[in-house]
Amino acid sequence: MINNKPSWLTKKAGDQKSFFEMENLLKELSLNTVCGEADCPNIRECFQKKTATFMILGKICTRSCKFCSVSKGIPKAIKAEEPSNIALAVKKLNLRHVVITSVTRDDLEDGGAGHFVNTINEIRRHNNPITIEVLIPDFRGSKLAIQQIINAEPEIINHNLETVPSLYSKVRPKASYIGSLGLLKQVKEKNKKIITKTGMMLGLGEKKEEVLEVMKDLRELDCDVLTLGQYLKPTEEHIDIEEYITPEKFNEYKELALEKGFRFVESGPFVRSSYHAADVMENIEMN
Image (cartoon, rainbow, N blue to C red; front, side, top):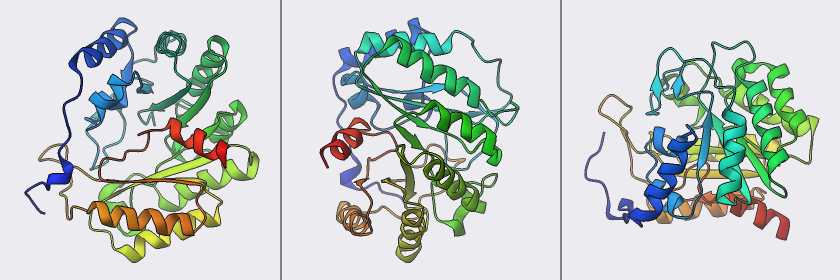
């Protein structure tokens, strides 16, 4: 464990008015965001730009990953009006790109895949044109659930590996590295037009060689987009930070990832899976 947060991890506060306007809209429509529930350091910047990552299926997760600050426990019933409320929020915000994620719902037969599909369809029904990105859980490895998402044809399907295989038992004890790779593989095999994306946190004790090996595994599956960011410990109960990765090191990882063939890479201390998400579509379309 290390202390003394370095200077490059200081974030400016941002505009308060825009932040509260966004918060009020979310409260008005009874919507959750991963920005708020996961204590994202970029929340004020993103809310100021009128963008957010909507979190469906409630805000209580059935898993207890050691890095995440989202609440754990017994989830409440799904809100049937949630997809239409998100579609309305997207319209009010005039978004060109929207990201939908969720808590993990192992208590549901399909893991919530059907609710994802309903949300995608509602957004498309009320907003045109728009590009949709979904950041999905592993659905306990259910190929049927994953196929439901693929059939809905969001432009981007994102599923985070989070860390290197050697740290899975510590960081993601209820998840499987091979299973997560299999999810990304299934997407590309079933629909090559869908952009596949994944993200990792650094600073948990991983070695450079391990990060490069993960990049290799992903490119063998033709994964398109990679995000790399610094792990920040939410509370004393969470996993310790083993290292603060310098901006220079993040830049080095970005160059190495691009050399391996990723179509887009976002790498830096404050990068999160959905940070500057719209840039992916813009850059890939230009190339």
